[in-house]
Amino acid sequence: MLKFCMNFQTILADSKNFYRSHNLESWAKALPSAIKLSKDAEAQIARAEKLRLEQVLVFPDFKTQMAAIATVIAETAMKPVTGIPVEPKFAKIYISDDWAKEPSGRVYQTLSVTEARAHGPYLLFYNLQALPMPTIGKKGNQVAKLFKEEGWNSFTSPELLIAQRFWRERVAAKGIDPKSKELGKFYWVWVVDSGDKENCCAAFYGLQGAGMYGCKIGSANKMRGANVTVVVSI
Image (cartoon, rainbow, N blue to C red; front, side, top):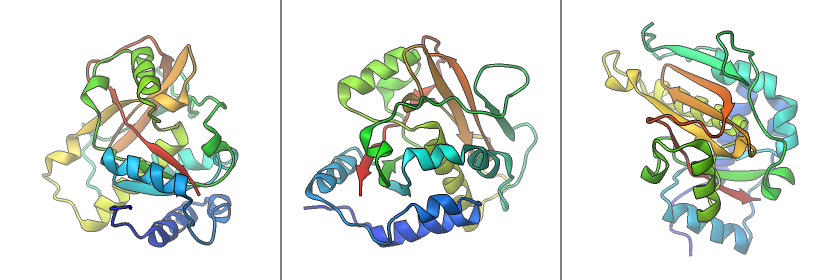
């Protein structure tokens, strides 16, 4: 029995509206007209509940996502968010598939993803503001090993770009105090499901900006953790 008090039809509508408002009509068209949950899907949602992943969006299949990745980057990272005060010392954007002084404007993302992501639309449960303590300060390969042992998913690069923008716009829509400490706060993360045995995407996101960069998976950052996600086929 599911305890999550979620209206999945509303989540579906919100996802479609978000994609259409960001020139991702192909994403919106690839989503179903209604959410139908199998027994397996309900079990996965119960797992998301246990992990306290109470943020959720509906995503199209991975191929559809990557076909429009340039638009995703332009719409979710490059465009300012209306309603969020910009403080130059905090506002930052950096998008690159390597660690260079001049960003390439591309993101690092392996083409090998889970079956649920590859074969159709899915619900993605996550919590942008929660980084499990065992992931903090570890090398990327250590984090990837932990995720494999725990049976966890993380974000892919396109998923994180969408999720952070959706969050920033929701916060802006509610209004934000120009003096809020949240404006200067950033989360630093390994994007575990973007990588392979040698390289991975790392990222940062906050109300005033977002960034992604490809790097060696054996590197570490004392501030960097990783988000856990649950992928639910629909």
